[in-house]
Image (cartoon, rainbow, N blue to C red; front, side):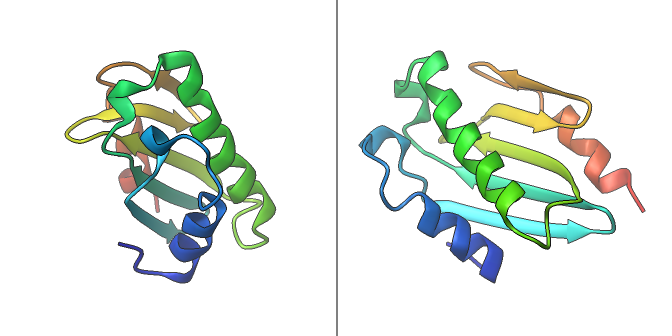
Amino acid sequence: MHTDSLSYKLKLSFDNINNSDLEPTKFLTKIKGDSVLILVKIPDLKKVKRKDRNQVMERIVLFADSETVLKEKEKYIGVYGEYFFMMIRTPAGSENESIASKDLLAEFYGKG
């Protein structure tokens, strides 16, 4: 599922990933004021070692930094497995856990 052009471009950036456990199935981007929310679902993420998950976040950040419309935005990124967020990155901090606190993403909704 990709419902907007940014989500579609993000999906394309994952098309050449070599680990089938890291293949995302859903993408969502939402711009609100000076912030952007990027959500990615990777159902088999729990099968991947925590240190190896970093390549997913790095790919998302690289994508966001390369898109002109997103360059100056505060980025709120959430990656979730089958049921829970496992990686979060926001201006306030980041987590890479079995179950990451989605509270870090709440600030996006409180903005502007």
